[in-house]
Image (cartoon, rainbow, N blue to C red; front, side, top):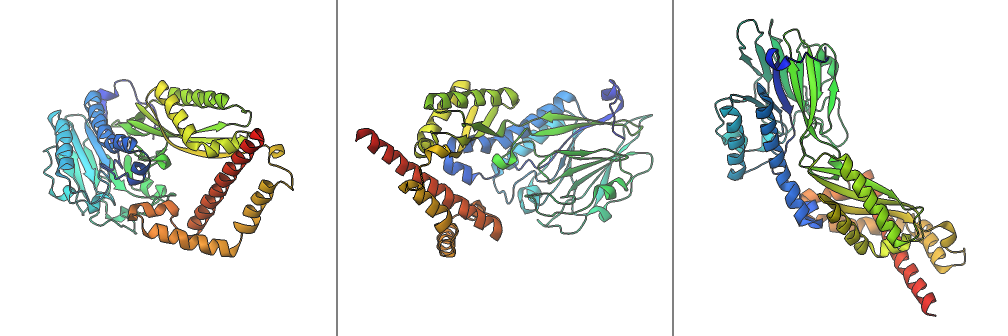
Length: 437
């Protein structure tokens, strides 16, 4: 049962930090294409966040650190990474804090995890289920920590049957890398249900694999801590680890501790009531200040979105580079904010879109109904996109979508945005001509 523990839990309880999905040195090639400096920041953020986790363990004087898989991002060969990891785990070992690690689907590809010489107080579980028993002294229950790593990057079947039964008269903690029942954006991995985990009789299940935090209370506490540091806009929001305290009577106390050096967030500005560029810039500045106030992370990485009907719609599309420069300048004035990308989804007011006889209005209607919806255009667009996609590095090809349906929708979206950009430039040219006539 999960409930608030007494204030002296640091003395009577078994306390540990639970984390997963750190993805050290994760490649960021798509981000690097847009902003190399931001890519450098995020590329180093996973290491800095891991160091922050080690600091938290030491400052909280916990008994252990549990890492539920995906410490690495893949087939890492850098000895620099190995030395960094050994040094950080060595700090814990020197402080008398144990570390328990299992390999996840990404770790299974890593040669470092097989070759690295770990400090004495670090336990890396192997391909057979094991448990480590920690004696805590007279009058205190021992702690049994159960773990299992996978040697291969796929695990289509449940790993749960491989784990031993709960050790009697002990605090039982299981570590597992699993997709549970599945989640969007995550491959199925060692699937099992919360009910099956509850049936083990363990006090706590320390899970990994899903990058969004979730906690399930009951006779067994089940926690997916989420990743401690996001790597792109699809991993937005605050990121954290979980500080866990378990008493001998089974009481479990959870504390979420934010750890991310850089937090990704989406900021949407309704430009519907804005008709002047200066007013738009001020709205942008106000929105960034609010986002910076809300975030506790040292650095904030923002994807700016603009919506609504505004007479500035054409100009925003035409001068997107100037709008980006404006956003970056405002972000620099506020401090510790990066602009990752602009999404401009504004349209001109209906009265400004022209009558049915306006050539631009006719062209817009032709693009939307006569071209974008035609089979011939779809065939030509697919051929062009396939040619471009084949020339991209393999890790960037998902930018066009992960399956046929998503890829087709993405192509149409890009084509529609391109059409809007063309109309914006034509509208701008027409307006300039009218002014000089």
